[in-house]
Each structure stands twice: as C-alpha cells, then as structure tokens.
Length: 270
Image (cartoon, rainbow, N blue to C red; front, side):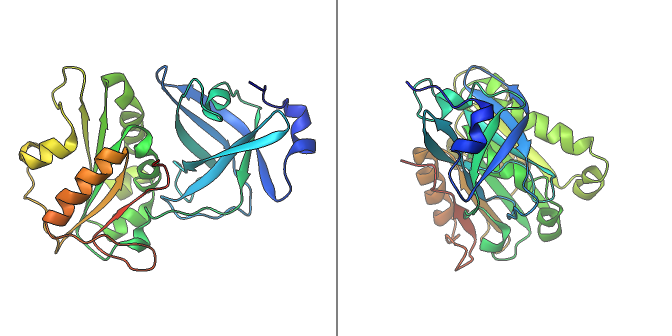
C-alpha cells in the first residue's frame, strides 16, 4: 500500500483545479468513527446537506470519495464525519490525518439532501444510520431549517451506544451556541437507537416506526403527507425500508428538479 504524500509535497503533486486545504482538528470517537475539520476556501459555496469529493494523494495519484459536508453553510471551516475502513483506498489513510496535514477537495458540491428539494411542510424527519448523520449535522445547525419547519426530528441508529456520541455532541453544541440556541429553541428533537446493546431505545428505527413505538416515544401522530417531510441517509437496506414506509404513508420522493415530500441521498450506496 502506498503511503500518502508528505504535506510539504502536496502543493507540488495536487491536481490542477482542486482545493488543497489544511486539517485544523481531528476527533476519534471509536475505532470505527472520527470527525475532522479543515480550512474552507473563501470562494467555496454549498447548500447545507450537500456533499463534496474529498481526497488524498496516495503515492502519486489522488484518491477521492464522496463525503457529506457536516458543517452548515455559514461555518468558516468544513467538517466531515467518517468511518474507518482498514483496507479502504482512502479511509485507511484518512483516519491517520493530524492537524496541519493537507486534504484535497474538488470544487463542486452536490447532493439531494437539501431544503430546496422538499415542498413546504410543518415537520421534518431526518432518518440516519452510522455516518449518514453527517448531512443532517449540517442541516440542524442551519437557521434556514428552522425558518421552514416548526419541528425537526433527527433520528440516528448505530450498532453500539458509543457510536451515537457524535450526534449527542451536535445537539449539545447547538444548545450551548450563542445564536443557534435561540433560533433552534425546542424545535429540534433527537431520537437515537442502537441495535446491538441494551439501551432505552433499542432497534432499527424502521422497525420502531412500523410497530408504532417510534411515534409513541415522541408523542407524535403517524406520518401525514400534508405536513410531514423526510430526508434519508444511511445503509442500502435502511434507505429501502424507510422509503417504503414513507411511500406507504402517502409521501412522494422528490429531487432538486422536482421537489416533493421526501428525499434520499444515494451517493454513498454501492
């Protein structure tokens, strides 16, 4: 396996037309999950919920993967939440980055998990598993989300309790933020579940929706296409099951070109 290029060689080797940014902080949550933040180019614009192609020089070649931008559009830095894959072409190297290291980023962001892809509604559900919480980390910190919705329910399902920490850290950050706390108020609700350990909320969120426990726990009525909207990001099975539940409730899948009641991010599946 080729070693990543040294920082001092980066500017020389980096492909033309690509941003070369500096890592500012790294937080390791478990042996499978970590967050990193890096500088943001002054000219880089994106909509909260979009993703970018992030990469490293591995040997003399750039290796890229799609990563949801976890920071909101107003943030001066860029944040990403990543899984660690021991033999992954990119993540096997990316998990070893430190502050001061350089990261590549292609210049055009994209994605379907954006507010513009939804028709107006009252309540927004964000369904996520694992690192699928990343685009919602951006959206729950964006004031526009709370301008458009009266209630926002962030769901996050992981295998183990320790893997939920990033989500709880996000909510704590909002509660303690100088202006977000006032904007968000009590509009944001966080529903976290695990599948492999004992926990007050145990099971796949899709199973809990079908059996009604999800709605009972939150004190909410069943899905209503007149007021409820959804965003989905996670594993292939979770996307399929959640899509079926939303469609059975009468919600229709939308896109950037044709907004509707729910949207799915498929860029990370396969």
